Image (cartoon, rainbow, N blue to C red; front, side, top):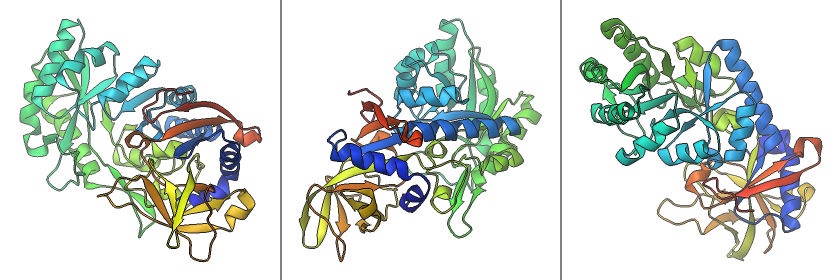
Length: 391
C-alpha cells in the first residue's frame, strides 16, 4: 500500500533495513521504525495542532505500544497518549508517558480501575452508567474526582464489529443526568469513533456521521444539562492534512496514530507533510509452484498489501517487485505469499513490504533505528509487539 511512496520519500529506511538484515542484525518478521522520521512527523503534527488550537493525544498501538518511540513523540510536542486498552495505558504509564484518554475503544475492567486512576489520566471514556459508577467509587476512595468522556452513538453511525457500545443519542440526557449525580466523576465531553474516514473515490478524508453525532451530543449536554464541554474528541485519520477539518466541524481533540509513521490511507497516494517511517522486513523461506513463501507473523488482515521488494540489494530490489497475496482471515500467517512470475526469488532473499498495520496484534519484533536521515543508521533497540525490550 505504501511501498512506492516509501521508495520515493524514504529510501534510506529501506536501504538501512536491507543492510541490517543482510548482516544478520535484524531477523525476519520485523517492523523497522525510522525514529528521525517519526520525530519530524510528530513535531509537524504538534505545530499544526497548536496553530489550530487543537489538542492531540498520541496513539501507539500501531507501533506496538513502544515506550521509547512514545518518549520521542512526547518530546516532539504531543505529550499525552490515548490508550487503546488498559494494558496499553499501564505499559505507557510505567514508562513515564502521561495518559490523555483511556477507555475509548476498550473499557477499563472493574479490578483495573484503581490502577488506572493511580496514573491520573486526563480523561476516561465510558460507555455505560455502570462503568461511570465504578470509576466514581474508586475515585472517591482515592480522594479524587475523575474527568470522563461519554462515548456517543447515533442511529445512523457506523461502528466497526468488535467495537460496539456507548450511549445512544436518544438516551444520552437521561443517562447523563444519572452520571451527574455521582460524586467521583465529572463529565467534560464526548467522543465517537470513527469520526473521519478516507474515501478512495475522492482520495480525501471526510467526516463521518459519527462526527456529526459527537457535535450534536456535545451541544445537547451543554444546552440541556449546562455541562461545561471541554473536549469533543474526534479520532481516526487525524493527520496534518485533516486537522483543519477536525477544527472546522467543531472538534477539540485528535488522536494521531498512523500519521506519526506516515501511513494513513491518504499517505498511500499523496505526498503529504508526514513522511513514511515504518516498513516490514522478512525473508524468503522457500519457493513452491511459482510462488515464494515469506516468514510471517506480522501480516495484518486490513493491510491492503499489494507487493514487496525482493532480493539482496536496494538497486536490484527496486526492479524486482513481486505481487503479494493477502493471507486469508481463516488462516494463521505462518507465511506470506508472493507470486514469482517473471521476477526473481531465492531462499534467504530479503523482503521489504510497506503496508497499513497494527503491530500490537502481531507477533513481530520492532526495531528502532536512529540516524537514517543523516545516513548514519544505528539500531537503538529491539522490542516485542507489546513494547517490551528484547535486546
